[in-house]
Length: 480
Image (cartoon, rainbow, N blue to C red; front, side, top):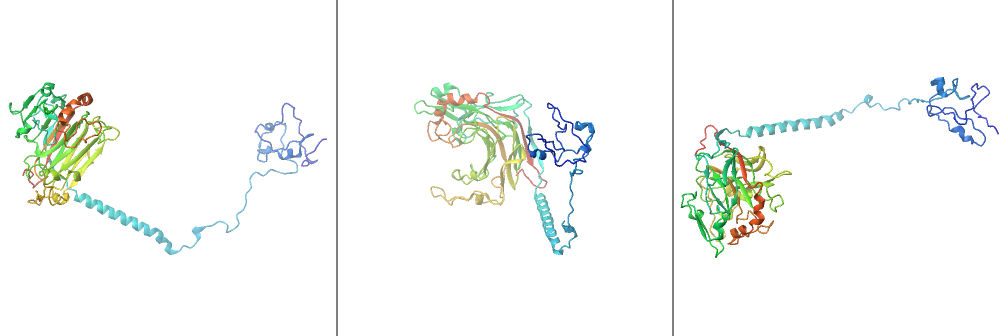
């Protein structure tokens, strides 16, 4: 049976042209605003399938609908409404700007603004006071060494030659040979090497005083021997140590910068450091020691930290058993690299009020120590040592808080090897000797097939430049 759309009336003038079975009448816009005429078997729900949001027919070109004439609207429905506005009742929209404000509310803004202003003023005063309190010293150049001459100037540098271990039981013999200390391509090289096997494998005596080579006045630092029977041997390795002790490059307060590449090699102990010229307050550590930088040549996997870590320290105390270095010791770790892979400038700035070490820039400090109280008080030393002897303040005769760091110091550059003072801890990372053993040097020598291959590629310290300045503020005699 034929169904008629009840929405259409007799007044409708729009007559649909039947569509071909293969070409359904579909809007080319993908929509339709005219309900299709149901046929037999179709539900009346079909009348509700037209798209009420479709583009009005009256707004389209006549040809867009697929007909030869426009359809103004659906019969009996009138024009389609696609936008609907509604009025907001009067007073329905809040207008807080028209309301009368409480006069007290302004303080909610004023009080925080006052606080911010006061904070900024106080911060500015503190910064000004801090900047005003900073002492800007005057520095006079003492040594600008770039090794461009190809030789070490004997008026400045001394190649120290000893076999006594330098107080740490170090295993190296320091030599003046070009094998261990030399200048190449305008740079200073300090390179450890193996000792002559003949001096170790047979009974021998090495006497540096015979040829006047020894730089120490103590015989124990100048003579050593190999005794096959008791296991003592001549130093198993050779290395270099240069200093400015006998030259003119010594300072009391000032600044030092050394641009260097540290070595890579198991059990190497590179150091850039300073000792007092005259030991004014007595033997070590009473007269102090300044370690600008020291490290270990082992790689980063070494338990105590290898060549990826450097440290700075001051050594000071009334005797060797009460060295308070641990109170002024700081480490610095390289970021994703080692100190053997990249050149660095290692520096120290030292005055009567403070001392600090740094890497590359004075802003990147390693260790900072102010001299704001007597060091004997800062050390908090015991009243007596282990044998009951009362400990005396070795710096009691001075009112300078920088004591013992108030005297001339000289610079040392060296690469030590091994030692029995604990710098390399027993039983860690395959250490081939025990510090307490009387045959520690021989045990180290016997393990050379393990550690010596690690020296092959970069087993030397290379120094590009050394710069030393004396603090020379007007009106103060720093040469005393």
